[in-house]
Amino acid sequence: MTEPEGIRMGHNWRSLLRDVAATQDPDQLRDLWWLAHEEAAPHERGRLLAQIEALGRAARKTADRLAAERGEAPAPVSQPAATPPPPVVPAAPSVAPVPPAAGGYVRRKAARAATPTAHDAEQERVAWAEEVRGDAIEPDATEDEVTTSLAVWHEHVQVLGRPVRFVGWRGQTAIDLYTLLAAANGAMVQPERLRSELARAISAGTADAGTRRGWAFVNPDTSPRLGQQVIEFDVTAQFPGAARSTECGDGEPDLIESPSAATVREVAQRAGYARLAARPDLSGLRPAARYSLARIDAGVWIAAPEVKYLHGRGVDLDVDQVVLWPRGRHGRRLAVWSSHVLTARTTLTAARDAGEPGAALALAVLKLMYSTFLGGLLASADVNRSDTLRHDWRDQVSSQAGTNALRAMDKLPEDVDPIGGQIDAFWFVADDADYRPPGLVYSDLPDLMPKSHQQPGKWHRNRHGLITPALIDAHAKGRHGSIQRAVIAADDLRKGAGAL
Image (cartoon, rainbow, N blue to C red; front, side, top):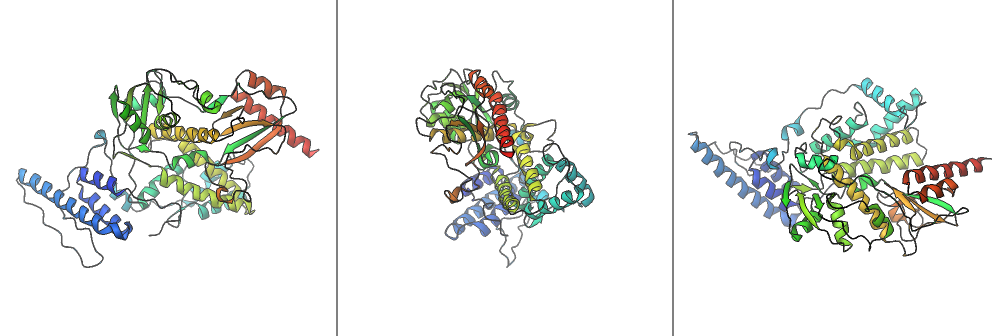
């Protein structure tokens, strides 16, 4: 089975071996044997297969001992077939995997082998039409545009060469895509709904001060003036780009009181939260970071990517509690899903730019799908009834996306800073309408920066226009939302003047 380039992920064999050793589940052992046989590098395959066989023998001994304690005869050992080479794991009574409450996970073999449900093409078309004609896309889409765009979706959004059906609405389709990819990738850890009341309270903002919300700021150290241009630069595919490298927890976390400095450093490398016992000194940070993080104080929980960012900038953190997913119970659980979505985004963008009918609508639905899933559905108990209800995943992705943007701002020259920012949009002022801040890597300059063209996490120029009194007033009052509206108005004014 060959996966598209950019989707296939490497395997952390040590982690997989450790996990399957903890469960001693024969089904998982067989799955891991096949995975090593088919995907391990030649120089490591023999060693891995030997280790898995040893784990199988240990599982057999455990199963036989448990059978003897119950007064049962040991199960017979299955005989391997000559070809293809099977897992050398004896057929023994299953030893129960670690239950979800203990922080384990389940690789649902039965779910992977299940027969797909019948597809109702007309029902899919109705759901697609409702999505396309939503206020955010194209309310006046014709029947032909609906039909054509759905066909384009089927052509570009696929798993193992089969179209991903649009089910119900974009949120359900995002969940189903995760399920399909997990079914097609035996190495993917199946998610479990987060049960930790503390972790959910942190995410909801009800645990003491809760976690930070929103990545927005106004830089009071700058002074926009009438006659200057305001130029907005956005992060390309910020959230799916960040989700590929975000560490996410499996099962439930541990609570650690009065953590050591070493434990706090571990948070930066895993998935979790740290509660601040005192307000950190942010005075040494660049303005974008200093003002973005200005509200963190004693009692506030910050997610692992923020811990990592602040440590990397030399900020001392006084932490009194840590919520941490232990070793072996975390990983880049959204990497395959995000890479798959980004591959579809790339091909749909190329199709749109080439003028292919329906591509623009299909791309718009895809963007709404991944922003809905990563930005809210992961933490929406009212809407998400699946095991992807992981409040912590949403927080870790949001934190990763925000700190990635701050790292980009840190690379600007010392005399260049934005006047403010909101989520993935940052605003700069200059005398020249064509100005671009030096130090950023751009995704919209194929001739000058071909390697970063259309790359997620890179920057592209969005809106621009002359600075207005409304923008100056919003900046003086520290209102980032009003700045955003003023930038949109300035851009609309410029476009209107250009049309005259």
